[in-house]
Structure formats: C-alpha cells, structure tokens
Length: 424
Image 1 (spheres, helix red, strand yellow):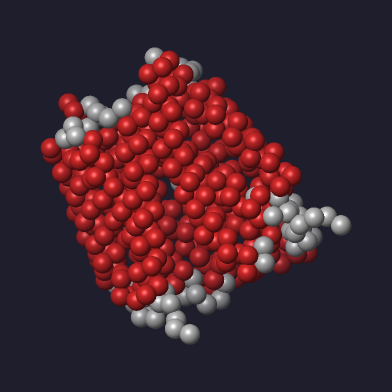
Image 2 (cartoon, rainbow, N blue to C red):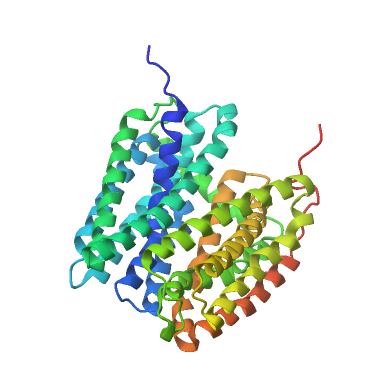
C-alpha cells in the first residue's frame, strides 16, 4: 500500500513554481530590457503582448483536461519553462537578443498559463474539500513568496552581478540561468512528490466530444448572464490606470534624472519595488479581505476604488520633484502598493460575484481572461504615450484615466450581503 504524500511536500513548491515564471514574463522582463537599452515604447508594446496567453487561457483549458493527466502537464511545463529560462540566458549576450528573448518569453508565457490550468485543477483533485480550504491560504502565501523572490531577490542579485561583472548582459544571463536550475529542480521534485489522484485521468474520445459541447454551453451561458455588458466594461476598464502605470514604473525608477526618472540602481529596484512594494501589496490585500468579510463588498466598494486610484498621485510627486532620498521613494512606493492591494480586493471579489450561478469556476476563469485583456491593451500603448509627453505628464494622464475606474464602478449593482461573513 502506497503511503499518502503530504500536501506540505508539494503545495508550497507548486505555487512557488506557478508564480516565478509569471513574474519573470510580466515584470522581470521589463527591468531587464530597460537595463539592456530598449526604449520604453518597445518595452511596453512587446511585453504587454506577453499577457495574451493568460487572455486566451480559458479557451484552451479543455485541451489540458482532455490530453494526458494534470500531473504530467505540471511536470512537463515546469521542465519546459526551465528550458526557456536557459534559452533566455544563452540569447541575452547575442546581438539580436531582443527578438530572440521575446520569442522565448512567448513560449514561457504559454507554458506558464498552461501550468496554471494544470496546477489549479490538480489542487482540486489532489485534496479533499476540507484540505482545499486549509491550504488555500498556504498556496497564496507561497505565490507571494515567489513575487518577492522574483521581483526582489533576483533583481537585487542581477544588480549586484552588474557591478561585480561589469556587464549588464552577463549579469542578467547568470540570473536567468539560476531560474533555469530552479525550475528544472522543481520539475524533478514534483515528478516524485505529487500524488496520483484516481480522478486525474486522460479522457476518452467520447468524453472529449462531451467536453467540447460542455465548453460551448459554458461560454454561451456566460454571455447570457444578466448585466454582462456592465460587467465586461468593469473588467476591462477598472484597471485602465494601473495597466498603463505598471509598465512604466520600473523604467521611471531606472531612467536618469535628465530623462525625468529617479536614476535608481538595479538592486535598489529590487528593494524598493520588488520587496517593500510587495510587502505593502500583501498587507493591503489582507486588510481588504478582512474589511469585506465584515461589511460586504458593496459597503467597501468606493473606499477601495479610492484606494486603488488616489495613491497613484505619488508618481506625479516623484516625477515632479525627483527626490534622492530613498526613504521618501520607498515610502511613496509602499503607500501606492498598499492602496493597490486594498483596492484590488474589490475587483477580484466582483469577478467571484459575477461568476455565481451555473458554472461558477469556469465563468470565473473567463472573467480572468477579460481581466488580462484589460491589462494587455492599455499597456501596449503606455510606452508611446510616456515618450510623447514625458514622465510627469504621463502620470497626470494616468490620474485622468481614474475617471474610467470611477465610471464603471458607479454602474455596478451588488447584493449588500455578498462577501460579508454570515453570523452563525
């Protein structure tokens, strides 16, 4: 009789492995390209395209369910992502690095999105409902640890290597080689550590046909939901300011004073945005969850709308006065990320609220696709806007875009009891 494998042996590492490639694609790539001399317009345009696999993720999730087991998908995608990290490490020092690394980032993004599908599905198959509830917080914590490790520790390491080696390209090549080793090690670990649930099986041809029909029914039901037009506007426009801001934060922090930036070193970015900022984000997210559980989403909607919008003013201040004091800069980033973490809770809770009814899990996945689309499209043009008007005017433009956030929030109709902890 096989001994049951402890969830502690695979859940922390599984969600660390889910988080690291995502932040490598969406955040670390921006910092690396900026340090390698790519202009803001190209960085914003091409790295925003990397969101596409997460936009269309729900539409190929049935394929993951049909072909092979989720367990095999997890191991295979982790090993492939390790190979992608290795390819990036080898291509960074080449003359045509921008084109080649973008191609590999594309492959990694598709692998990462596929890994998300398999990992989240496996989580439900590998655990009882009781254990799913218990470990929901654990998996979130280790996903956040991956955030701090990727945006913080690895960026700090890259900055140190830039100084130690005297070569920006070699520094980032080594950093991605380290990520390669980590993903390969995680893939090997999960080959042996993941359990083998009886429900995790490949489907027959007949069940595949049934799955495709079911998928069509799910999509059709989603677009028949009451209030679908308002919901789509909210999903696409609520994060309009953030979608543009997030692509330009790291270039702004790295650019020299003459270019309107703050002239921070790479390792300072890892501390300021990748560590202190992430801590603020986590605290804000926890506070948001606690507040909604007490009074409900409708009660906290407008405070959270203000929290995700108004702190963006810190970038107007930073771009106008360009302070050298790291305490001031770190405090501004912390406040902005704290407000974002608090406000973003409302957005995610609304996606859950809208997904209620028939097919809640699948409809939530479709909503996250529209969320990714809402980040991708504005992000693509953010670099062009910044180069056209400069950092200070760009951040003022971001504040004006908050009007879209206010407008779509005012259109929502939410049950006052939703999200509120029910008294026993």
